[in-house]
Amino acid sequence: MPEQSASKLVQAQFDEFPYPNVPIEQTVTDTFALFANSYTTACYVRERKVVKPEGKVMLNAGCGSGWETLVLATANPGASFVGVDISPKSLEMARQRFEFHQIADVRFEVADITDLRAVGEQFDFIACNDVLYLLEDPVAGLKGMRQVLKPEGIIRTNVHSLYQRQFIFNMQDAMELLGVMDEPAAKAVPILRELMDALHEGSFVKSHWKGDAIKTTNGILANFLLRSDKGFTVPQVFEMLRQAGLEFISMVNWQQWKLERVLTKPVPYTLRHLKKLSQEELLHFIELIFPNLTRLIDFWCGHPRPSPAPPFTPEEWREGSVQAHPLLLRLNARVAFENAIRDNGPVNINGWPGSEGNIVIDPFSVRWLIDIFGEEPVPVQALAAKALDLMDWTPEEAFNQVVANLKFLEERLVVLLHSPLR
Ligand SMILES: C[S@@+](CC[C@H](N)C(=O)[O-])C[C@H]1O[C@@H](n2cnc3c(N)ncnc32)[C@H](O)[C@@H]1O
Image (cartoon, rainbow, N blue to C red):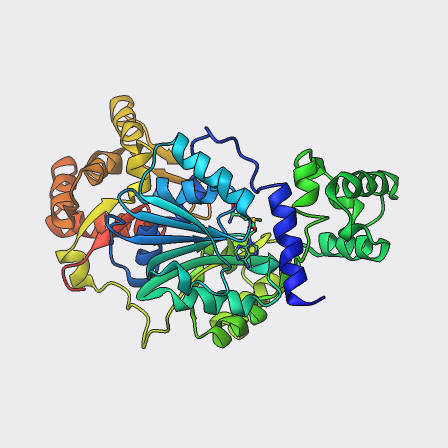
């Protein structure tokens, strides 16, 4: 199929059903989406520096109905936004959404992400969710974004996982054989439903025909009848990045890609050999042994850098200041700390996107850690002094205990460290 008609088909699909079909008036509460689209998160992961979004210029490439742009605007107060898409009908909905929420610093334009020069700006942050796998040439999409990315800029983007989504690709190919993929939605959706309902329970495809969401018209169109959908492996993603002149920074859901999460016991032979693998090979190993890990290979990337940010030194911990991740301030996490102090209990942080599991902060640590929820970062030394007042410790013991706790939380981005030395 020539490039032109493939993207016309995609446009037609999204003109008919702008995606996602989230009501205009809905506000954003999805913690993972806010975390993943936060410029502060992305910069911290790459640089171990705390950078505020105020005054930054952000692009939502393939913004659809503007829901993702609203996530971006909610996650990054004080920034300005441009949303582009090839579907004019989707952009109409996006404009209505922003009018409703009275967010002024935004504009929406029809543009193809493979050539964004006409947008006429360079961006600090580009969010491009659920778009690249629809392109005939995803490398062209990455190159298009790279063209308008500032030298220090960061892109958050993703592609479908080939392994996780195999059942959907099978069904799309089967529908292609029947000619259903070229039919209008009103005809194609009932045909797909009828076939799925008739399938033998033992079929691989049928075993995934579960839950209400995937059986709705929108669920079917976004999956089994999604035109031009493609799946990728980790080596393919790394190769596309190389071809586009971009550097992989990290998986957005990096905690899910940790070996500790996919293996439940020590496996000495395997671990010895895994140590010799590159980052790309290790991620590939994980997707091979845990193919159902995640629907998306979801990552941050940017212009190549000479070297990655080094880990914080002991001196940086001694001289640094800490603050809670801005999303925790927004979620009013301080109230949970106040309640825990009142009840002399712990704080449970559940479902935090930076953590592989729930985090429990003991009743004693809650009392000194509450200071991280202020407007300004607090010196680590000040937290250690407060801990010293609460316990019968030497100053050195208090400092070491506080830093050990902070390191655990910093690794999970609950706490961000400002180092005067970087
Ligand atoms: C699955 S939707 C995702 C929308 C939005 N990014 C989100 O996550 O909510 C894919 C969107 O990408 C748009 N799209 C597809 N190919 C494109 C291209 N080459 N340039 C710009 N937008 C494109 C479609 O029109 C559609 O609105």
